[in-house]
Length: 391
Image 1 (cartoon, one colour):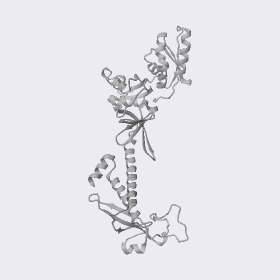
Image 2 (cartoon, rainbow, N blue to C red):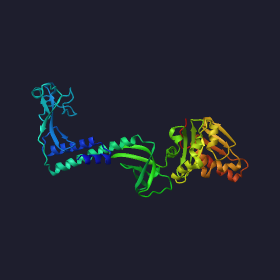
Image 3 (cartoon, rainbow, N blue to C red):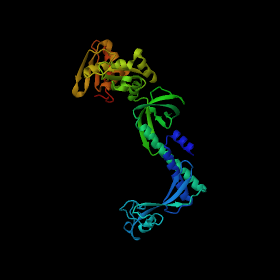
């Protein structure tokens, strides 16, 4: 029995004390089913080494002041235990023992005390009692396993977890994390990625939910924080806090802009993320399936930060309209398409990164037939969709 409990503890991560408690509850349920009396309070004690079980009946010591008259109604909460000092109950011979009788057994007995009486041990149980015991054990182990998983993953929100693709269902991917399964929904996947059963997978754990049906672990590969955590794995400076990720703007599968700041003047924040010969940033890009990543240095000056956010385009002037939280950008003709980006992507990500609406003005030298549609596209696509995290 000892080895079986230890194996179960190792596989399920459930302390053996809880497993023993579940078995004792199951034995109590089986005993009451076949041999117990109505309203009887039964306890079981299972010996961990030998497997022997001892049963006993529990009775609560009461005095006359704790009892209701026969014509009085009991409180709505039942009041059957008699364990609360001021709660009055109807006398039940299977539950209660009068104080004067209790003191014949134990001289120092007081109202509210519990006295135990040995019951005959039974080893032969019927089919229904055995089935009842089985259901109790299954239920208790599920509850214990649920809280064990919750305790393990509740403190890991915001971290990267590793798992294996278990199955795909209606676009959702179920990831085997070892003791439990995480859900990578269609909305949280990188567009264009395909997953195979058994494939190893990294994902960002953004939510741990406790539900009546168990613990739900919500995973994401499209979350901006996934990129930050990947850099934290590759760059010790980020993991140690010497380099801080101040803002991220991401369009999963296409491009990400990330602004970093160093708390140590001797550390280059951009160089820390890029790594020697680009090894660090290339590792992150590979994990993201080739997604482009722009790393810029955080600037306290809004004007300079917007200039950096629009890189690789070279900006001539930045005019800020603080009340409207809008920036007007002027560039040379050869930099206009670079500043806007394909489909307005560069300007749109810069707007998300800085938290400012960005209007890029086409230079007068550009042909009229080209400038109008591009200007419209730039204005339409550069309005920030979300506010980024800034200090």
